[in-house]
Image (cartoon, rainbow, N blue to C red; front, side):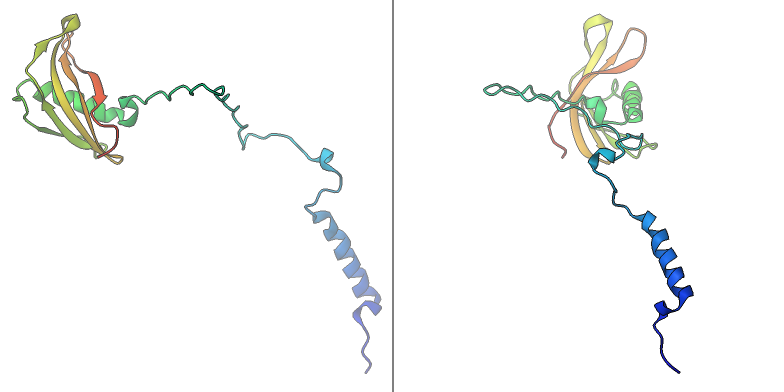
Length: 167
């Protein structure tokens, strides 16, 4: 028996040639130049936002607007703090630390009255408070006023961070 190379047989060579020609269309390289690339934008990738102009040389850039204290705390936490203050702050002694918890978010903290109730503007009665909030971001301290408004609601006013960083 003699050995013959596979391509000498007509059927295997024909099958191999058809397979090579058929797979040639699966190439990922473009056949033409760059002008033939499809530049269609789809919704899967957002367009880049325009760059902010840089401050002219010799001038300082405008300072970044500070975030509101409300931005960093869940709305249900603020509501829980407001309701807790409405029922507990009026009877508490100055400096007494009151614990609050929001079972919905797992956040908790303290409210401590810093002074006695005082009349404030627009018919409100207010009491200065120190407030802590402990949530997934960490522990933060604030100061502000818990006020009883003329419509009978309790609101938090002038709440500002006592510190700039998380504890």
